[in-house]
Amino acid sequence: MKKNLSQNLKSEFPSTLKQKLIQRATDGSLRSLKKSNSDLIDFSSNDYLGFSKNKFISDFVLEKLNAYSNELHGATGSRLLTGNYDMIEDFESHLSQYYNSEASTVFNSGYDANLGLLSSIAQRQDLILYDELSHASIRDGIALSKAKAYKFQHNNLEDLEGKLAKFQNQFDTIYVITEHVFSMDGDSADVEEFIEICDQYAAYLILDEAHSIGTISKKGLVSYSQEIFARIITFGKSFGSHGAAILGSADLKAYLVNYAKSFIYTTAPSVETTARNWGGHLYFESSFKDFDALRQNISHFRDQLGISNLTGFFIDSQSAIQSCVIGGNEKVKSISNQLQQDGYDVRPILSPTVPKGKERLRFCLHSFNTKQEISKALFKLSELIN
Ligand SMILES: Cc1ncc(COP(=O)(O)O)c(C=O)c1O
Image (cartoon, rainbow, N blue to C red):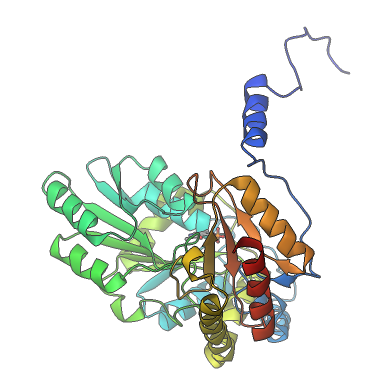
C-alpha cells in the first residue's frame, strides 16, 4: 500500500533544468526527436556505403547464427562473465588480421570505445593533447581520466609540436589524439605528419578512424599499425550497423579488459550485432565497388560546388562529409527545411554542437546517391544562399 509521505518528494522537473531547456529554445538550439523520413534523398545518414540495407549482410547474419548456435542471440552478460561467446572472439581475430593489428577489442559503440580507452590509460602524471574539434566521446573520455589535458588548434601541427616541446619533460607519458576524418568539418588530419612528430617527442598517438574507414580509406592507417598506439574503428558509419573496436597491441587489449569500465561493466554486443559487423567486413573486403562509387560521388560533389558558385561556403574536404558553413541557428534551420521540402534530407548542425557563427548544413554523401541527385541538391542550395 502507498505510504503517507510529506510533500517534499516531487515528480515535477527541477526549475534549474527547465531553465536550461528554455535557454536552448531561446538560442534556437533545442533538440527534439523526429521520425526520419525515408522518402527524402539521404544526404544525412552515416550509412555511407548503404550497408544498413545490404542483403548479403542480412543473409550472412542468419547463416552465422545457425552455424554458431541455434539458440544464442543475446550476449547474456559482460565479456568478463557470460558474454564472451565464440563468434565475438573469432570476429576480433578477423579484425586483427584485416587491419594488421596484434589485437582488437570490440566495444558496444565508438562512444564507449573512446570513453573506456581515454579514461583508463592516462594516469595522474600523464598528459593528453587533443585536437580542439575532437568528438564529444574523446572529450568525455578525457574528462573522466586523471591526466592533465590541453587542446591544440585544429589540425595545426605547429601548435601541437610547440606543446610537445614545452611539456615533454613535465609528464610521465604524453598521449596525442586526433581524428582521421573530422565528424563536423569532414576534413582530414595529415596522419603521417602526426606520426613523425609523435615519434620525435616519444608521444603515443591515438587515431579515431570512425569516419575514414570505407570513405577515404579501405583499411585506415594499416601500414602504420606498429607506430600508432591505438586506432578506433566504428561499425555505425560505413558498416551500417553499430559497435566499435580498438586496434592495438596485445598488452593494450589486456589493459582494456582489466581497466576500461565501458568494456567491463556493460553487456557485450549481441550475437546478432557481431554477425552483422562481421558480415559487413566480409562484404566490404570482397568488393570495393561501393567504396569506389562513393569516391566518385565525392569527386562529383566537389566539381559541382565550383559550377554552382558554392566552393567558398564549403570546408575543404575529400571525405563523405561536406559542410556548408552558413552561420546562425535559425538561418541554417530555415535553409535545411527548404531543402527538405524539395526532397533532400540535409540536416542543420547547430551551435553548441559547433561553435557560434560556424553553424552549418552537413551533407553526408553515399555510394548510392546518384550524380543527378547531387547536382540538383547543390543547384537548389545555390538558389537559396547565393
Ligand atoms: C569521430 C567520432 N568518434 C566516435 C564516434 C562515436 O561512434 P559511435 O556512433 O559508434 O558511438 C563518432 C560518432 O559520430 C565520431 O564522429
